Image 1 (tube, rainbow, N blue to C red):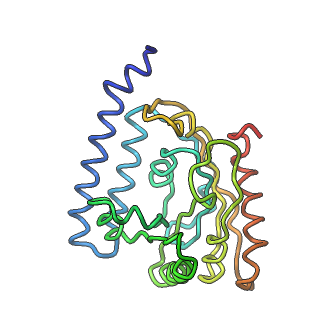
Image 2 (cartoon, helix red, strand yellow):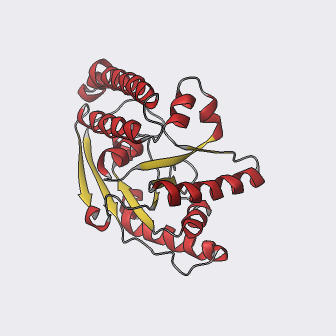
Length: 242
């Protein structure tokens, strides 16, 4: 057995499991006193940094200056690893909420935490309910001044980048906020899709130019989705071997 695998089994993974349990408990307690989700987000940022520090993940950041810290955006990123979420929470200077499949909200402890933190459940099996959820997400962006993170591929990609789903573009247009392409490179090597062993290594997070949605209509969301995928590919394509 290689040295890094032995380290992952005996040190890295147990420490990560402990950090996840501790952060989840603190976040849940914080949610009882802060219904806005901001305290939980602060815990999530600390959790993200901890999960990067334990295995020794080094993140190179590009383009953060394009974001206004108190701005509201729809962030669209590629998704190749469970480590994508810690990287994004730790490194993006925004109040982030994300869309998650509804089944996660039924998991004990996790579901209650997600709901209290202000994340949004998507009922994928019901198209009418999904559309209502997208409209509700747009309202959330307008009223609370937060940013919404969406993995537009619909889940982790084991190979080439998948086609993007159109929800992100729809929400951004409905809310009237910029949509921002984000590229992640290297997280697949840190935590492969079919592995639970985390290793250190370099990761790159690239933020592209925000795309304004002023003047766009809802029926423009298909064209915007294609534009988004092209932009994310420009930022992260080399991580897929492209």
